[in-house]
Amino acid sequence: MHPILADPRRLLWYELAWIIAGVGIAALLRLTEQAEWTGALEFAVPLCVVWSFDALSSYYICRSQPYSQRRWPVTLSLFGGASLLSALVWLGLGETWNLLGRWMSHDNRPFVVMNPAGWVMYFAAGFVLYLLALLAHDVLIAFESVQEAARREAESRVLARDAELQMLRTQINPHFLFNSLNSISALTGFDPAAAREMTVDLAQFFRRTLALAERERITLGEEVTLCEHFLAIEKRRFGAKLATELRVSAEAAACLLPPMTLQPLLENAIKHGIRQVDGGGTIAVDALVRDGQLRIAVVNPVAPEDAPAGAHGVGLKNIRERLAVLYGPRAHIAWQRSETQFAIEIHLPVDKESGA
Image (cartoon, rainbow, N blue to C red; front, top):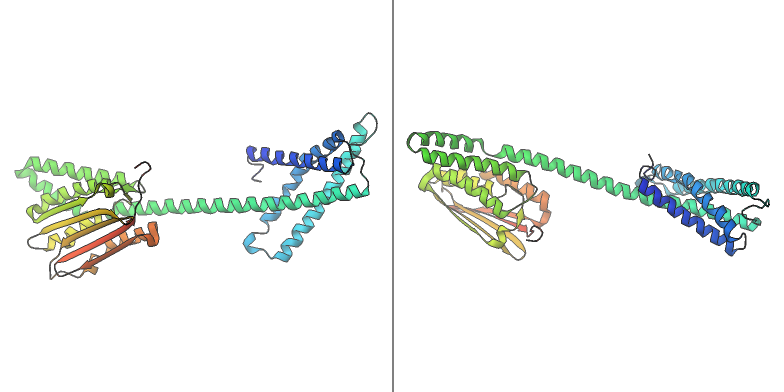
């Protein structure tokens, strides 16, 4: 269906524009002394309202010539021919309406008494008006194309986000869940209170994981709270072998970032670092805002004989790909490994919630 006919508001504005065009034609007829004001208005305004529906055909002509596929000689010929044909219809309609005006009047006078030059001018006006209708519909189609592209992009983003959320839900290491449940089972025999606390932390971790994953972006503070539940569980598993230092500035905590950005880094630090080191060690997290960027650094010990940094693989690769999609070149992630330490640093553009 024609987009103007499908929208009552658009149709109202469209007809108002043609009424204004009718008043303009009436003024032209009056200035050239082809008619009095009353007759010119009675002639031009109803004529423009009726003919406006003929001008709607210009939409389908424009649609038949997509802008990116146009061969301009063909397009110009088509537009010129359509305007000429429409101007002939405009001329015939004008003459018919003028005769009807003679028939309806008491003194047998038409709305306007035009000489041949006046009718030529009237014909030219119809030609120009149809060309303007073609141009207006070209703009309308271009606007619709932009809206459609934006809609498809939004749908693609939604689909990509759904896929990403599904990945986030399945990315949580099943071994973490199994190990946590085993630890809870073991604790119930000699420390029921600790088992209950670990169960609460595990439930809070998964509840917050699913809740935060539903959002496109969260604050770093919310991500840190999630990580605290995760670390509380892991500390009960590893005991004194695992220590953490979380240094997050207030300004950094208010910054927005994609959910599940920091937690996989801590999971990697434990899986590929603390677990492999005999004496364990400390995972240090530093987050601050500097030079207009949110900077997050995670440092953990590694065993000298452990595999090189590339073996951290899938988790870091997923984070890098996600940040590249969301931020492009504005995001930066890098890591390096020494004999006893692994360090990763993420730089993101500073973005905060409105009013923060």
